[in-house]
Image (tube, rainbow, N blue to C red; front, side):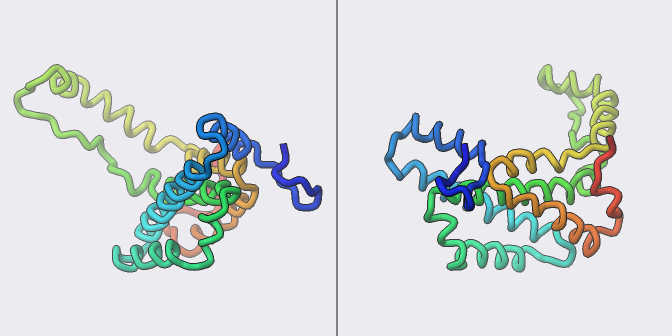
Length: 193
């Protein structure tokens, strides 16, 4: 189903339609639930933007917090939160920023060894399991960590079904690689087949 009655301004947003149908089945036509979901989603977007700004080289926590706070309180974003139909934009933005964060952190900024502390004397069954299988678990972790994958594209799929404007992810990723990433080239933006 398209999300507008007029042909010229219609967009295909199937995930958003399903989401609204689920909301309607649970809460009826009471707007509080719809608004609450928008506010929670918008708060999550602001938090994700803070993490994204913090991941950029040369940006400290204060600057990242200021940038995220400026986005959160700027009057231009008021329409996004106030109108229920803008939920696709809110959660599409969340997915887009999540995809960028996955691309930035995977695998270079994640721990290069399995981050487990083994106790000298095992106290529980879990401790004994980790002690006996640590090397096997670390091999699996490193294999997953360094496997060529397009994991960062997973959040983009629901984003495109929520708001077609999230297709802008590709040029944003290219700009990030050209400006900030020293370890990867544009070829790394395309996952191996």
